[in-house]
Image (cartoon, rainbow, N blue to C red):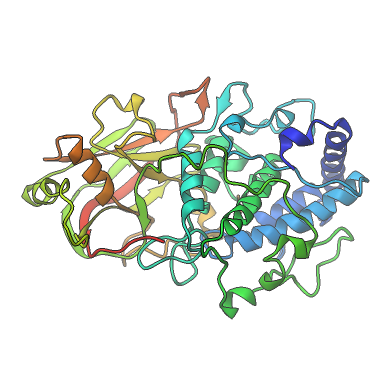
Length: 463
Ligand code: C2O
């Protein structure tokens, strides 16, 4: 149930608080109680400790959605039992709704067990960056769970079952880092599940998987046994025992098989009329490089602009405004390679091309917007929890890779007579907004981008 409806019934909210309180109490009595708050959070990730049940979260994987469904499912059973209310179910925070961009008030009350001081979005008036909601809508519009040739899929980036799908990166990751801020629990997968909002966030991610499936038009989960037969051992139920046999992915594809449904499975409000902005996310490596930076780019709190120029760039951009009759013109791709961060960052990083105005005014609804980079779980120590270990990286290159198809946006810019004789790539750190305005970012994290390049590729279309 949407948290906004959930809180209408005081007894429901009271039961949720009681369950959380009781689970926290159990952890204080015995840190190794599997039905305790901390143990449950540790199953997701820990900063230290060596219990085989800990540090299990599956990120950057085609089991991102399925593992988190199993995890949240058993957590909810434990919570329900701890609350003494057999009717209790987790509420979700629907951050795809423009009217729900603030952290739900029930989680911001300092007197409540749902409160967490180690987070950045506790203050009233603080909201998520608008590019997160747009990215979620773009993800829901994709029809393929798996990558379609060369393009990242809804549920996974690569054909090897690794890499972040479009619901994971940027929307899911973006909510994590903005809620947490540089030092918050939510910004690091090793501490995220200790914050009560984690569960309302993941309940929503789980719901969006279902929203996506319901949209039809070919949307479907993977059908290979390799995906279906995976199971998630070392999860506990409300008796405190390990669930045996472990739940298999084939058993958790339908929420009704697990005994729950969502009250709202329609497209996010306003999604239908929304003009998609930004570029498609590409996954395949492309070899025809047109221009590239030679030096590493470092981004901390201030926006950073990098120029890509030369005759070859001009040659491509001068043709950008013309559509060939055959529709088979080459694609132009922007690649950011070897992207790493030295510590958990509470910012998302928006990428723009040839911004006409001061970066402060940049908006993800503008034709200059390319896409969003999030680095949740990319900090050196947190990386062990990633499944792909940045699988895209070429030998000798560490860090993540982000590849965007900018063909369409260059065409739009050319038609608006934007000067494209040089390309200016701007990387703009963005925190949570305050009173609807982007807040000035003061980040402790430094992002390093080894190489930014422009490439051309054969025509393909995302599905
Ligand atoms: Cu396993 Cu939202 O993180």
